[in-house]
Image 1 (spheres, rainbow, N blue to C red):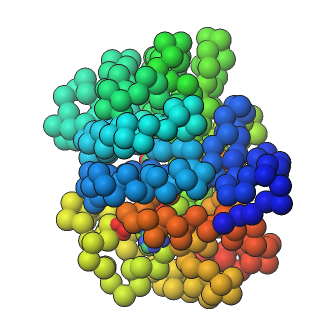
Image 2: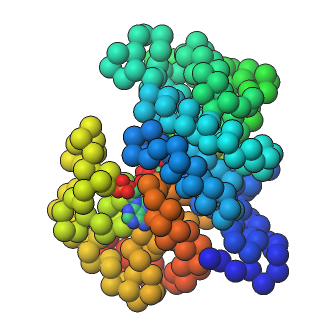
Length: 343
Ligand code: NDP
């Protein structure tokens, strides 16, 4: 764990206490823990109420103050599970943030035309439904889960601003939008004297770097966007667990996720992860810890959303707080050479 000399101190744009670092989410006043926790695939699929309660408890006790979710995760059941955990925990609602995202709808291929996308109707209904499932009065963050070229940008920006005005959401954001789409949302917001997106949620890990390191640079400097990055371990691949095949019970062994296995488990990627192991050994840490540390080394990352099916995984991943401080320019360059993914 990262140990500060005093209880609270400032580091660049961050506040650290003795177990966690908190970064400002872009230009907003909100401080998120640099490591957070999300429930995609896991809640209501791989873990039951008792395990989700223990994992979220461990996260909160270690200073994690952001829990990520979406309407599409297990057709809303992931949000229901998180809602039950939060109700049971009875933590002070002012001490943590929760999110939802809308776009994909609840029913996949069976969505009716009004049940997905970013129309005013779907965004509003998805927000209200997420509030009910999570048993909360407001979402701290609410994302457009993907861009929707079918809906005018004015409609999206207005709808998010109405939800803000109603107090149902506190910040709105985008996920996997291009830099140009994010800029367009900001320009529309400016023209209408409304509030633009404060945060983007992109994939960012040692394989996927282009958006964070190239495409978004103009929106970081011009609009001060924060980022809550997803799949820091590329669904577990960067932990090294797939080097000898697919272990039973792991994400890529799940029946309905063959599409994810095909996309993730490429021989060349596995070989690169194997080569990275020597850096982890050099730093006396694990591949998972090193890979997450590499993500939060980037100051444009507000928070890396961790996934974990076990408390032991979360404990291991939280060590990234110590390790990222040890990533010197030489080590970062060596990692670039091994991974070959620097844009
Ligand atoms: P990761 O890439 O970190 O993958 C997490 C999975 O890897 C775990 O569930 C576990 O799976 C395995 N794992 C984690 N730690 C270890 C470890 N130390 N050793 C071995 N295996 C480990 O993150 P996610 O893909 O889960 O993404 C994180 C969050 O980001 C999601 O929960 C969600 O909230 C968000 N997200 C957002 C998206 C978007 O479009 N906006 C898309 C995807 C995710 P297992 O034990 O089953 O093998």
